[in-house]
Image (cartoon, rainbow, N blue to C red; front, side, top):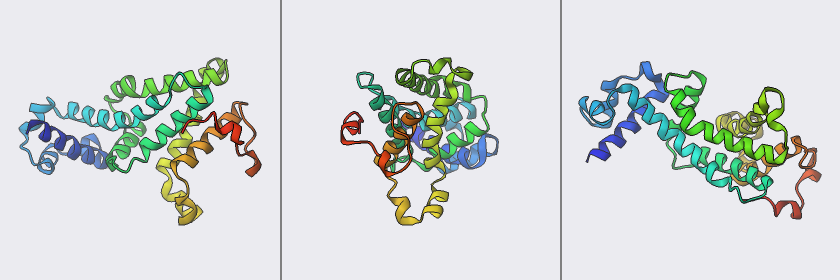
Length: 222
């Protein structure tokens, strides 16, 4: 089936691009892994560059939709922030998500290709703008801070990415049992409380006493 061949090509190419980069991934090897002939790339995508964009779009789409859906504009801003963070964590840690998704996006963000502009426009910018809107609700004037407030949003996102990218190091530092207790709910609560405290919308994170009270937790969406 044509759709099956297209999906196999994206999966095989995604793995190859994540491991070897755009230049290092061979069209012949990709087609061999996908079980199709070399002409299939031209038929389904037009060329190797378009195949690469399709791989990036698939990887980023699964990563971007959950936080966008979670950031319900009808909720209080604290709950929206929590939902946004939890959505990012859930997308990053989705057990059904192919491993190459994260690896490819990390490679592209560290060494952008010409495809980065399209992915930025279609997937990353809507995420960033949603987070900026939430932060502006929480702390009016954030967008007027130095560098248009972008570092504030980057600080929130970087906490999520730390747990997605540096889990092996965290596991070594903490030990297996403690690390395995860092589930999505715990991390979403922790990152949301940490960020809200930095914005002056919650208690300082100084120890167990800083944990949100039952009344506070009611405003946090899970």
